[in-house]
Image (cartoon, rainbow, N blue to C red; front, side, top):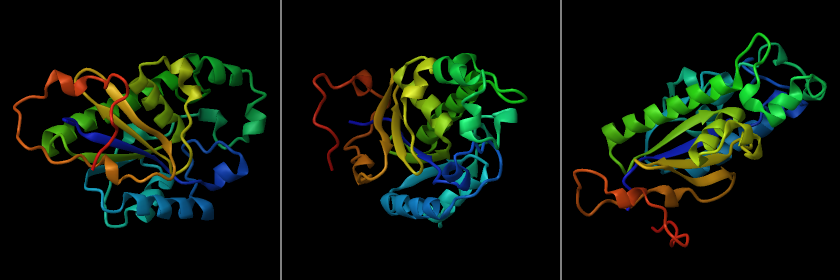
Length: 237
């Protein structure tokens, strides 16, 4: 039985910078037509889910995504979910950046990458993980262990949170993919996080709603943090 809240990580829809092959960073780029369609489509998937909290990066592309996906929800801005501070790389074409001496470091050793006039990738990862873990604890405390909550953020931010959930070094986070308007699902338990879904762009989300508990327990059992040996039976409705 699930005894922890469930986090849905939503990446914003495609932006004009994504379409043009540029690095937006913290610039106020907006969703393009495709991105707006992606946001509306993910809204259909989210419809009916009892979201106990919705938080977002302060950047306009995340707020636009939620306005289209969840028009009746007023999200809470969480500054720690903002895009990595790419400094002087922001606004540059990715093809040009690929020739920068820092590019191989970002690709192979991102934990050592510090962007000129910007942020270290390790700092980005630390503040993003701290944000979702603190919000998850808050949702559990205020809404109970059956709660679902959603955070809308950016590709590298989501990848860093996934790496932490998997217990892998930040240097491996480039192996993770987080497409525009994708949903990634994590459950944090007392012993370990569980990565439930990754980069999901079309699956049914209704199965994420846990069944009501038949009786209330004073504290989560350790077994609720145990992995199902052999893989288990999957989600049930």
